[in-house]
Length: 131
Image (cartoon, rainbow, N blue to C red; front, side):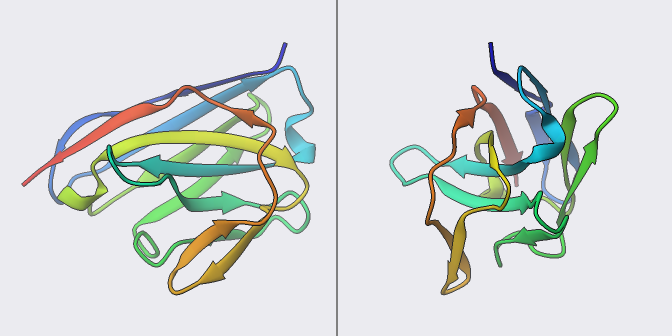
């Protein structure tokens, strides 16, 4: 069975850092793009960061660029989202997702929008940033 297990969320003060992890199993980790989404209650889910399998490049929405980084630990089939300089507006439930090859997003107006769907999803981890 395919599984994505997101973890690492919690409560942090503004300006602080957190590292989210996405432990995966059941598929060939190296053949898939890993993306991170977040969702605030009452708002649509937003793709914020992704590492493409096609070229290894990472992309970030304007809202997190320069503050968030993605890394993959291929030996553990785990992806990480390192979040620094956190702001109260980063408060959301964060999800990891996987799809073959590229990120499948289109960039418009500082944000990314899905062009292709993601095959596998993790359960989400809550990040709360206090002011």
